[in-house]
Image 1 (cartoon, rainbow, N blue to C red):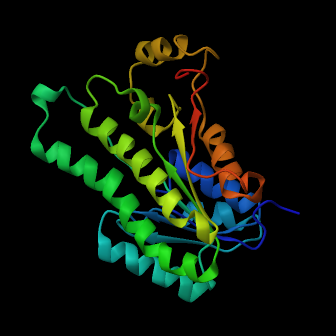
Image 2 (tube, one colour; image 1 turned 120 degrees about the vertical axis):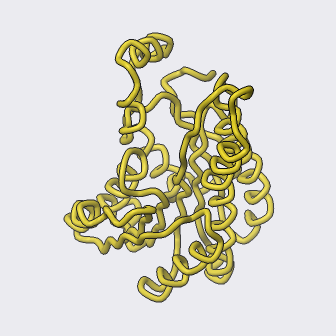
Length: 246
């Protein structure tokens, strides 16, 4: 029996990096997967997921827009009959020191990273309450736990996700709806590949496991929290960072 057999999951930001890894692993474990991107480059991911014998559908949708989030969930329910799992993964960075940070850089990161989590959680809440079951996994960051120079906007958004998730876990737990957080550390993605090799090596050297993580490392943690393996885990933050943040 596959861990997510017969479940329907929504994954925001599902066409690359961590999001794509989650979509693939969920499909491999039997879930029908709806995933989003802000551009229509999702045909390859659909085919990759569908190869596991599940239904996979990509949507061009901006989770930071309240109306688009509502429309996405409505379309998912109409086509798949419900939503069992929500993974809020969509996120951006606009890194710079506070003295140089513009209001636009602050607002954009908080809107995409944090408001999208509110929008999507609000949108799935109704159907999960009717079903009396559901699982929400929000992707934060070790930066949201420990902070980081040059990332005040990003750290604030990711710390906000943790506070939001703990509050929702307390509000919805009595209706068998669990909410947890995964906080990745230094993960090799398209985003980190743009960094100079010496910077990437310097970061990896500071990690007790002496390597960067992979999208699959994060996806496996998300799978655990999304599945019944974690049926008594609620309101928790799971760091996936190789010991970077202890």
